[in-house]
Amino acid sequence: MRALSAVNLLLALGLSPLLLGIINRTKAVISGRSGRPLLQVYFDLAKLLGKGAVYSRTTTWVFKAGPIVGLAAVLAALAVLPLGGVPALVAFPGDVFVLVAFLGLARFALICGALDTGSSFEGMGASREAAFSALAEPALLLALLVFVSRTGTYSLSRMYVWPGAGDWLASGPVLILVVIALFILLLSENSRIPVDDPNTHLELTMIHEVMVLDHGGPDLAFILYAAALKLWLFSALVVGAAVPTGLGSPLLDELAMLAGMGMCAVAVGLVESTMARLRLPRVPQLLTAAGAFAALALAILGR
Image 1 (cartoon, one colour):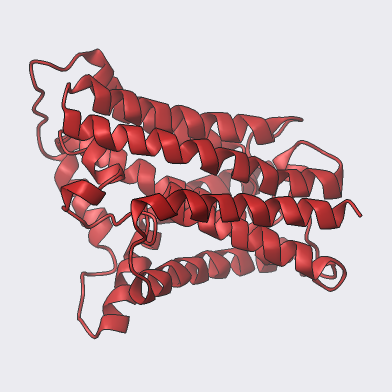
Image 2: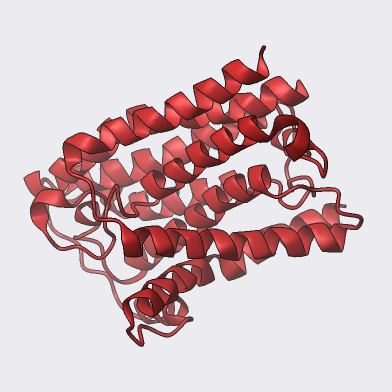
């Protein structure tokens, strides 16, 4: 079982940039374009790693440490994340709170790096990121508390054995609400439409991209790779709630999860192809709705 846990972590390290490629290819197909190659993100990472980094005189070690700390925090969060009914590589009671804490640390490192530039432009993006996170993190905790309430444990590896093959029949409405809440959080936490546009250069609407404008070379590669890993992490949370485990063998569970990850990336591409970006005042309402879905699921489960 420990070997399977290590394999899951290696799959995350190797395949997470592919999710971004699937999203881009889905958007290209929907819009009738040829689009970028499926493996373009891998090429971008290799190109950035081969470049040098340029630092402003106004920045300090905080700016340089931001991408490294952010990547390390996301990697640590992945270490406590189970997939396909296989326990995480590092599992212990209370690791659900460690997962949320590491995600918060990654965000904090990126915000500190943006503020360290002394740019009011990047400070604006950092302020928006911090404000929206104040709504996203409680919604994530509420969604995970549904699993805690159902399984009676605070360990992700034991929480995500639910739902099993027959649980959708018994708890279908609860699971639907949780999946919706987690999918909204996936879009928000990964700076996807309708919350943010990773391809925009319109100053007044940028959130994540404006915080990394001064990063380049290996630092930008670390940020891009951390973003891919974070997308994998949230996709795993969504798929773990949507796809039943216990299909008969660990291989079938693993294949079902990987297929679900691909479908989740396609779903993100479809959303971005059919929706416009929300106005910034509407984003808190969307995140509040995610929290409301999770709270409603918790209330139904507690009846």
